[in-house]
Image 1: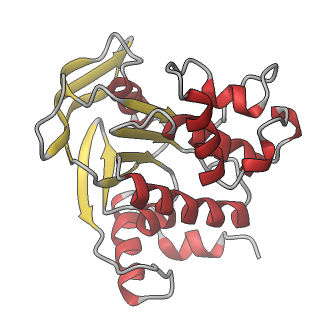
Image 2: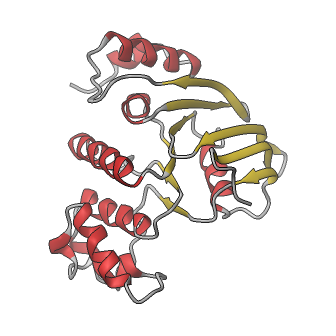
Length: 244
């Protein structure tokens, strides 16, 4: 089902159990058209389960789901086909006479115009994830679902990917639901951050920081502390354990 003009995603009483374990216990979620929302939660809290339900990849999910018909999903693993070159990966399952030109334009947008003939195994982790983004965006999705797409990347590459993702979002304006474990990442990228806990949304936190966003600002620190507290994390312990 499709959403209203102002609402891209409307989920009501969404439930999913795996055996005796109730992972989603009546999730209610509304996302405005063009909004960038980040979803936080502990491992096993149901973040990816909810994402797969919105993507139409879980036939056993229960509840009311209204989402755009045009959807694309990007996973933590780029999931590129190793026997196809980069351009063929982007055009895979794409239809229409202009698909090659569209794929070339998408690769240029993510800075990989010179990698069209490359094999996936020759790419760095960041390059492979950019191909995955191009493959999603070339389909012109109204809803872009991101399942920890930067979790396997090193810190410097992640920072570059944050800026690329924000640029692409500003240019194309899809509705985005971005699952992450990283509180800083959520605050840097999103218009609104949600916390999924005990099978439901326990916190909705608007992020009204001006761009470009900085971790050094007092408001960033306040938002970070609020989210860490909701996740039950002691910031002093968390900071003390960061590598030097």
